[in-house]
Length: 282
Ligand code: GUN
Image (tube, rainbow, N blue to C red):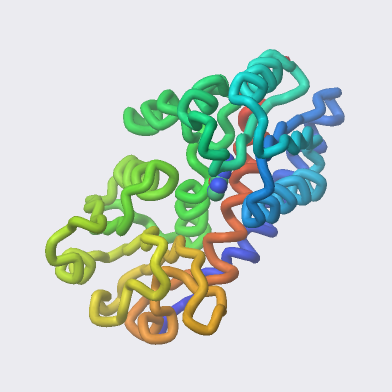
């Protein structure tokens, strides 16, 4: 028997708690602020940004939204971020990715101070995570850890396989699992015998970006399967990186798509913004 981990429910419980914590801060006269910057008119990014702003409203965080045209010069964007870095009303700064091609994303993201980097993307925050020191942690992998915690799943001593090595998900995911005492393997597109690696896993986190890539023959009986993917299948239906219908029977726990990791990501952004605010004195 498998259990479906309900990300929507866990996210909603977390948002209630964040809302009450944010309200406590407001009572003490502190309004928490998140700046969200979108450059250009990428449709998926517009949806993400809209949802982030809606989430701010839901938990009582003040959002400062900046919609800049696609042709915005890099210097203008850098100028805005430098201003926000100094603005005491703004506790978190998020630049929605991808940025237009003429902009050097790395250069832009470097201008976000570590304590306002609520995406947890900066080299400083990734470095702090690596040495298990206080940091702002990338929202998606952080959300995965919260889901496992919510289900009282201990990863200590377990063999975890992360499939995917992106800076945003795979690498920080591996670090979080390692910090929680799992034995971690990171697999990627060049991994030989991927199936054999996956078959050893007590926990698999799939963050590949390919629809239904993880199939039932790659799963050990009783494994915990977390699906970070968000793809469209051949019929245009939303699906993850895991072939859910066939894989689920072999699992002890599995996250669905939609309704699994997805709702946790923006929730963790709200949590990170709250943390960024309370860790600061102003
Ligand atoms: N683009 C896709 N996902 C994300 C995210 O989590 N943060 C930012 N800043 N941009 C993204």
